[in-house]
Image (cartoon, rainbow, N blue to C red; front, side, top):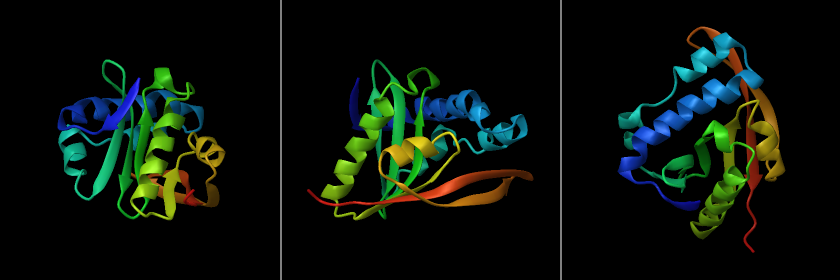
Length: 155
């Protein structure tokens, strides 16, 4: 496995990773209706490509993409998904560490995200603080996630 910057040819595979991750890992903490609503938010390949304006994306790759992270220029981690078969293998941690190191080179002093119930333990293990629970609706379905942040300290 290696980590590299996003390439346009990754878009379709990353869209599929998002969709599969939500469908397979989402039910650990969310109801079927919530998973269906969340899955409806999955960006297709064209939308993922359009999202590349003013942000950085890194991709973990074996023979094909297996995980990705999306970082906006203000330190917001927007999308961070791994193929279900690699969840819990340390690939997400490596991808996150690469992104944090990059953020420091860009002068960022804070990273923040909206972590799902499934992702919250991962973020807290990386040193993020949970600020509060966010309750909202997607397609008329009540769902929640957590606002998390981490203050970065240059070495």
